[in-house]
Length: 313
Ligand code: DON
Image 1 (cartoon, protein in one colour):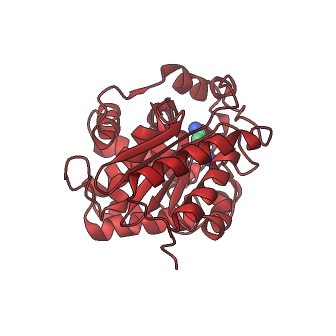
Image 2 (cartoon, protein in one colour; image 1 turned 45 degrees about the vertical axis):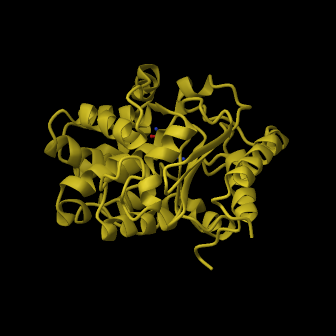
Image 3 (cartoon, protein in one colour; image 1 turned 90 degrees about the vertical axis):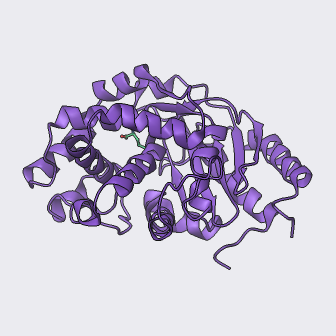
């Protein structure tokens, strides 16, 4: 087994994974239901690791910013878990895998406007509704959270992506209105969607994302500045949700292949957590039918095998 803390071997492995990535560039396609994302050149690849000492390793386009999309749902949930009571959150959204596409409306009607979990679109929109109603200057708070977690004051919203999502909001708006019809979503739908889309439009690199999520590998403490992001029991809960729900209806297959808590986004990013050791972020824009990066998934499989990390045994 390769020690993940051996810097030279770790860098060599990342370089190897990045060199192998182009062999998957023909597979999958870039998200085109958000026009601003369809413009992203499809054949890029980046990877970064942040270990629990805060050391960062990267390869390929690991420093290039991409649209984090659904990875932002974790940042929103962290803000909610930091600032609100458990009942404020978990009476309005569930904690079970949905087994449905990330933007499906089917289950939401059957289950009377209560989303299965905070990572499907309906659940994430509901979390943003809670944030909008409870937290002043929440756009600012969200951006500051991303900046502080990543230790990068230059992180920003990509206004074009946010606009493009708002211009093509029909499906998310329908989820929001259905939840409003059931009395679960309480705010103004466009205001709620505006925050949700701005989170999705955060532009961050693999290095940023790996640094920002390293606390999840470190019992809730940021290895960058020693600050407590989440209490240990909440950190464990969030990792459990990421393992069971982070990749939507592909969560079971991801657990099977990679065996780590993770979260994907249709910008092509995937973040994965090795508890006690490191966070990993991969990015490559071509997606499979579940909305998950094809080359990113392959890279994670290769990496966990190469590192010999297996928290599930
Ligand atoms: O709302 C949407 O559909 C996108 N802004 C985010 C979806 C997403 O990233 C799903 N992840 N794989």
